[in-house]
Amino acid sequence: MRVSSLSDERVIALLTKYFVPAWVSRDDYQLDPRGKDEQSELDRIDAERHRRGLEGGTVCVFVLDSDGSLLATQRVQFAYKPENLVPFLEKIIADKKLTPRDAEAIRASAVRPSAVKPKTEDGLLVHVWTRCDQAGTNRGVSHDRVELTAAEWKAFVPAADARAGNTWILPEAVAHKLFRYCYPPGPIWRVNDCKVLNGKLKASLISASAEEARIKLEGAMELSFPNTGKPTDGRITARLVGVAHADRRKQALTSLALVSEQADYVWYWQGKPQPIKMRIALQLGD
Image (cartoon, one colour):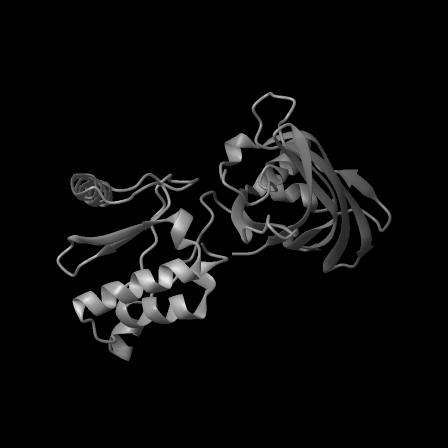
C-alpha cells in the first residue's frame, strides 16, 4: 500500500484533512514487543470486527470513530488500489458529515520520528535499503537498521601502522551480519528467513594521512530467501562496491557506504524460476 494507494495524492489529501492516520504493525516485525495497553486495544477492535462480521486481516484498513467504535474496514486486496480506497474514505466522510480538520490540529497530530540510538556502548547503525526494479514486482524500498558493535565496526578501521595498498578481509561474522538484511521487499519481512550461503567483504586502504584513512570495499554474497530448505528457495546474488573513511587519531569509523554493482533475485512460481533485478545500498548513519 505504501507504493500504491498510500502514495496517491487523493488518498493523502483525504487522510490528512479528515482523519488521524495511525500505522500499527500486526506481526511485530523485528520490533520490541507491544505494550499491554496497545495489545488490549487491538484485541478490542478485533473482537468488534468479528462480532459485526466486518473484513479483517494482518494488513487491513480500520477506520474508528472518535469514541473508538469501529466504523468500517477494507482489506489490503482492495485498499491497495486508490480507485477502491478513495470512494471508501469519501463514503465515510459523507455518512459522518465530517468537516476538514484545522491546520493546527493536523500539525499537532503529525508523527515526529523519534531518534533511533545504538543499544550497545559505542555501537554504530548501518541503514540497509533494497528494491526490486522490474514492473509488477516493485513493492517499494525496504529499510532496515543493523547495529554494529564497537568490536565489529573496528574491523573496517585499518591498523595504526597500515599503509596505502594494504588489504584485509572483514570477519565473516561482520560481513554476514550486514548481508542478512539484503533480502528483497516482499510478502515476507523476517530477517530470520534469510540465510547467508556465501559472503565475503574485502577492504583495501586507498590512502592514509595522519588524520584520515580512505578504504575501498568490495564484496560478493549469495543469500537464500525465504530459506526453507527446498530446491525452490529464492536466491539473491550480488556484487557490492563501496568506500569507508576512518579517523586515524581516534581509530574510529566515520563513514561507510556500499551499493550493489550487480544484484539478482530468482524466486519460483509454479516451479518456474522468476528472475528479478535488484538494487541494494548500505550506509552508516543515525
